[in-house]
Image 1: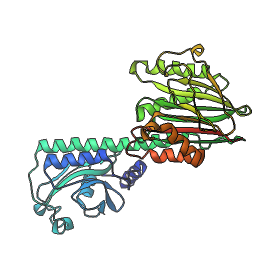
Image 2 (image 1 turned 60 degrees about the vertical axis):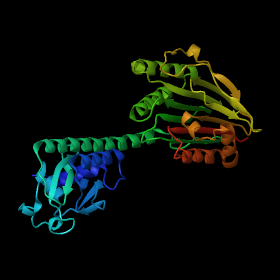
Image 3 (image 1 turned 30 degrees about the horizontal axis):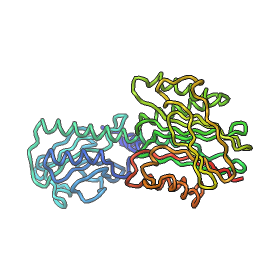
Image 4 (image 1 turned 45 degrees about the horizontal axis):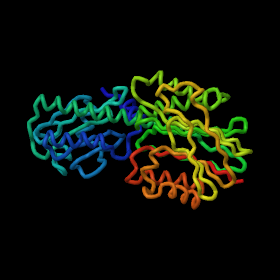
Amino acid sequence: MVDEARRQQALDRMGILDTPPDERVDRVARLAKEMFGVPMVSVSLLDRDRQWRKSQIGLGGAEAPREDSFCDYTVRQDATVIVEDASTTPEFAENPFVLGDPHLRFYAGHPLHAPGGEPIGTLCILDTTPREFGESQGALLRDLAFWVQTELARDQELDHAEVIQRSLRPQSNPELDGYTIAASVSPRGRLSGDFYDVALLDGTLRLTLADVMGKGTGPALVAAGVRASLRTAPGRSLAEAMAEADRLVEQDLGDTGMFVTAVHADVHPGAGRVELVDAGHGLAFIIRADGGWDHLRSLGLPLGMGLGTAKEREPAVATLAPGDCFVCCSDGLLDVLDPQDPFGHVERVIRDLGPEGAAREASRLAHDERASDDITVLIIRRDA
């Protein structure tokens, strides 16, 4: 006997109801339609008084009443249900979905389970004409249902990871007299392999922007580890902090071939002095008030390539004069800039919109069809 209260609680905890379509789940539904040659397929989740469809083909809507539904019966049985001809099956012959629209005759459904094992819905295939359904077909339906179940659980895990990653970003930028600070992060998918950090340490503005090779969960985990390493012991010099992060990535991920490009810098507000260590990133600049550009680079390979000594991470030095902007970005931004004049594109946007407006514009461009990677920008303008 299914515990309805526990089942509903498990479904609510997953947070799937009324979420947008998921291409991975839609793909399984399309495969089921082609494999079984049926006109209707549904990935249905059983809410309190409705069946809500995460994916559907041929059923004409995202939800229907739960009462009298074949999927409700399947969830209550918590087992595969095969109905070859509903009109001659006692449990379903008087069912309103058999007597009326869509005049169902054939149904095959297998329950979908929450991570705790509670039945929360079904993958089902349907037809308006009777058909036979053998053991091998039943096994295939169960395999497809397990695939859907895995995708739904993965979706829940991604939701949790996305919330945690957002919480790790600076919730607000420091307020610094004479300076304007703006930044944005726009993941290509649910999780970002980019990150930025900015904080005031004893009157000095310390900032980081890093880009982990790849996209998705793995790079996001690496990004969290690098961020934590660079934040540890804030009294260390830039070179020492970067060398320790390099050792961390090399030790833990050296055999994966994964690497991290990063910029770690201090801005000393009074004099506008910038000290910067660049680990193979190459995308830090100063836009001068007169429109000129200075490219800021120090010699250094990306993190994870074995250059783990502070001695070889000596910082580059520059000065921000009033009206100058420090700009650092991940390489995803390059995909969406004017290919004929990328530097001019950035300069015009910052000049016309200011740092905050430029950060918002970067987020907007992240939805451009040309965008293929995470996009992160960090802009610091010395106003006076």
